[in-house]
Structures are given as structure tokens and as C-alpha cells.
Length: 83
Image (cartoon, rainbow, N blue to C red; front, side, top):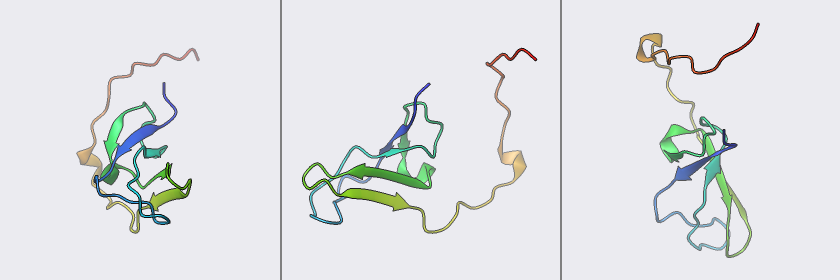
């Protein structure tokens, strides 16, 4: 089990402080299974700029729209618990 997911952002994303291109975004807002997710799948993601060290964090301006419960499906249970 991982601790975060990597986030894919548009290649033209630049540091808000120095203007250099930035990469290596991460988020704990997804399943945290070391997957690569699109930025639209999470509510926040972040990285530091390799050029100047500035922390760049993006937060969704509006909450994700509520979807009907019927849009979800149950996953088979792969975990076992002793009760």
C-alpha cells in the first residue's frame, strides 16, 4: 500500500514564484496506491519547485459535483478481518 498518488498536470504548468516548469505533483486525496491520476480526479495536489524550492499547492475552487449513488458499484472485498 502506498502513501500518495502521482498527479498528471498540463506540461505548461509553471512555478508561481519563479516561472520555471514544475513536475512531480503528488496528492493524498486519491486512493494513495502510488497510481498516476489526472489532476481532475483529486481536490488538491502539490510539489516543490526544483529551481527555487517554492511550495506549489493547487486546491479545487469548487467542490466536485454530487453524483447519484447509482453511479457507484461495489468492489469485491479483498480484505479479511477477524471479528
